Image (tube, rainbow, N blue to C red):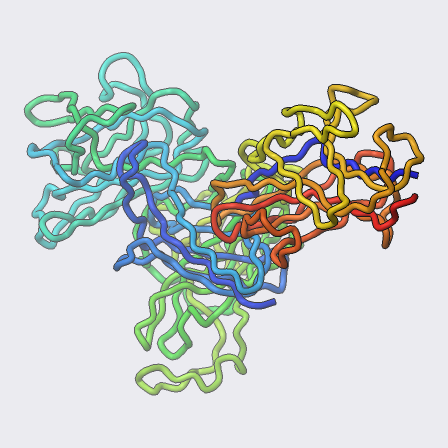
Length: 623
């Protein structure tokens, strides 16, 4: 019987986004200076967390640098599949969440991250020479709810470089007839406390809202309105030197209102990425008031999404405790109140904090992959934080003053600002309610798609992955020529063909042929052994991403020691040596005579390319 090994009729290579020995995760976080611009500015002081799937894993923590290289961050930990979260609750940058970050032992991943804004204008090369009582900056909504606004005055309107400042109000307005000062407001007004800038004090400020508080309709026009809390007070904003496409600026001033041919320094963040923030930090002032030292704190809230994505809590440690970077808290989600049943996996959140040698303050945080903590929108849940430290883990710790640790496990979270009340929940200390809320951020996935862990994005990156383009074989002496694929052989007797399927001529097949003269294939095996196939290099890939191969395979003989069918991939991208040790070969399913669907594990290129190898083998020339 002739041995016929038919290879992929339809093959895809698509990007699986980024989702043993240690690995390194590093990179820089950027944002375009202007919409669509290739000029980038670093996003500094953004906290990052990376968590392996499942319980019994301690998250990694980092913070993007404010010094050179600005925006850079670094984490290291065990290999596995990570979910990574970048967010500082007190900065209006839209949180970045990466799922399916696959890592292998010893890998070093260095990748750029780009922050996403509904509108991002971060040009501080010019400013408004006139004092204004307010500014309206228009934008086109791309999401269902605004969750943050970031802005940067050049002068606070009080004393500039002096010690005084003033509170600012921020609101969103939906376009109507007339000028923006007549447009109706959408949602509540947010407040930025003590805006104090001018001269060397080159600070930016921001505000936030919970998802759903400021609803928007994608494609419609809105405006950000920024003004002093005290009516009649003035201030000045940084402006772009030139107009910015897709947005207009309207200034309210004592000497008259007018449109300006520029845009103010502003960032608008929205629910436009599959995430929601049901519990946000709305007043963006950090470290206002401590809640009290305890082993366990909780906060109740009402869910909007269907699965928890991340939690970040502001906290501090006492002067005789280890730095928060060395401390951990268990994060549990309970249905209902603090005594309710635990929902989903329990995570260990890592501290990420400033440490002076005798004091530490910052955040505890962790990230979740879709489905780890399933939620029901509209239901109340309680996020519980409990220290993992013990007398044994604290004993012997000395601070830089040589003060001995008091061996009291616990931590001290921060309260929300008084102007940032959360009316749908409350904080709990050791299970007992208190009359304030914890300063934290909760992120959720809006949905949990089936097989999300196998999700890919973008087009098929293979040339002729469907095998539908090329010149088909006209007979036994004509192998045919599939576009994009090159034949290779390990056994010189190997014969490769590009054929039309006899049963369905529109279907094209790559075939490796060997064996004896009998059987159903009219081309005959030629009493040959076979070991070879077809190869293609896929170029233009990104090492910060992983990729998958998917396709359909069929073999006419059961897979055994004498007959094999493989798909291989080489992360180096080489196509010269089919016996190179860098090729990873995977034997195809043993179910014969039918087309079997197949999906590779995630593949990370060593540089910018991967080679795909399709291989069939038989060592018997006469069967």
